[in-house]
Image (cartoon, rainbow, N blue to C red; front, side, top):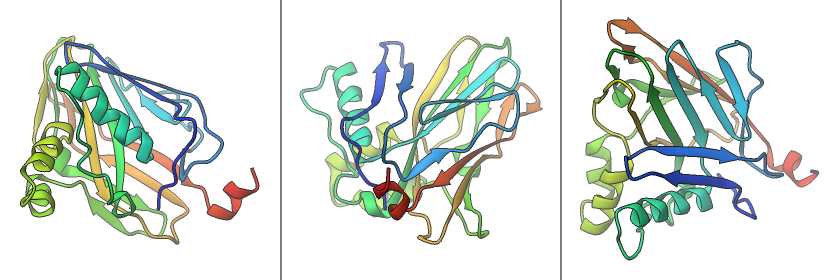
Length: 213
């Protein structure tokens, strides 16, 4: 489903505090592109959509295989490991991965439930993000891959204290070949008691269109 970009145009700089910053330039050929921003609280930077509802910033970027590989390499470097194991190598066609970073600049705690995240297409089909059970089903007989997946993918309820951030992966099943647009819905995001539901819209770029660019 996803096609690789060359050269790799994503920078995932992970700081020792556990924060990650995304900076990317629009590549020539991609499978997903951010749709134009419709609201002033949403901005597009390269392949990243950034939503800033009040004092909370949420950045979302779809990843192609090379970027997914770089993500796990970067995590390994921060944790001073010899090599980063990418558990999804070889099954990229079966998944739709997103990098997500939530920054809390408020005085309240921010809570996020990845189990309520939904990826919908323009045809109405939808899928939930992979949870712990799915990771165990996929990598249960390969402990090294399972551990790498559990460390890289956000699967459990997250609480982010004031002036802190959290980042990781959301993994969804591959989308339909007939899809023309995808909508990533974060339906369970709260700053204190205030709900901050967000929708990130991406355009699916057909292979024929990409080959003409």
